[in-house]
Length: 241
Length: 334
Image (cartoon, rainbow over all chains, first blue to last red):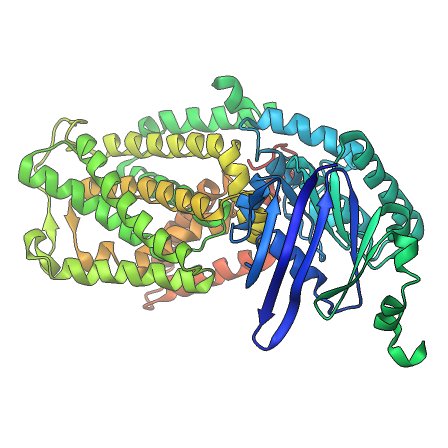
């Protein structure tokens, strides 16, 4: 299997705080890869560097053999990285369909083509019946799926999901898990997710990276990682173990 | 083309639009000179409101200095006509070129250095003020003493040089307004329009779906500036005199944003409805107060302000979105 995303020694400092510290890992084509870790571990900073919101202070990010660090978010999206935001950011005054059409227009120049593509994506995510609603009026689970729909409509090679399960009920989580599994299976879509909901991580991820204070403390299969002593200590504190 | 225009417009809305247009086309046969000048003023505000709406209503960039584009468009064509006899139709190309360069410069400075929100608004005011003070000292075009176009008592209208009677200006301003609506409709239904709306709604999310927000904001400024410059051309040839203190004044920038805000930001028909209502309101107040014998300085402004305040409080999205729900008209942005 070929490597889609290769991260080599990236760091990010905010004044004195080292948010991400010489982190390296690789995501293979077609993989579902999860990044977990306690709050403040640097997961979202890592995502924002891959998506181009922040430029790393050091190290390289390579997507399909091309170095992408330092590019702007829109250039990175053009190269096939779709992302969701931890706090969902739909275009509130636009309809659900128009939200997705905007994203579908990235690689399509005509609105009718984009509308057709948006329709397909909305059907896949069970949002087609709500396509005429304003995005601001959706419930949280629907808004989470709209966020995903918009990222998917840009035809990404790599999908970055920042806590898409947060705030969902268990049944909604299972639904989201099955949607993501299906996308991965049918399209071979590579998914990199940050997640706190372990139920979802265990069900989805083939590999897990655990971050703590900006560095990687464990990497491997999910059931292996959750038994790792360093991981348990990072979550619960060393004295409890 | 026609099919594309009809897209998103319900049959009821289309019928209403055609009827309104017909009524406006035959209006000069029934209207007296006073009413004609009021209608011309309405179209002027509808047109400039439409142009400004591209920036604020579609793209979410608040410009409070659109007077700069009015003034540059007005001075460019007026100078070319007076000094070289160049027709305003040809002069308009020069006016567009000048304002596009000016808009591109303001946009580049602002968006390159991430000036946004109120800071962007202040920047636009600053540039309009630079222009006002600059033209005040530009003796080539009369400085603060003003610049005047040659006027005579015209028996016939000459469309090529825009010298003539109010009826010519009536049809010209009506044509400009219709053209602006059609153009805005085409733009907002296209890829460009979707990208603008996305930027207006959430710029960071827009960037995350691959939109080069710098480029599309710049396009919005440039198109808005070019459209507004033509309103300046109209202004110059209709009023025949230009004073920097007047054309570049902040009042001019403010008055042209009232119609779209009042009618409905980001809607196509809002600026038109707003222009009709506000100009109608102002004229009615003048006549009513005169008839009542009220001669208190500023009374009109106070009433006008109260009316504005009331409508904005009750209908913060503007009158048109409310009205069109009431009328049961369909459509995304009409």
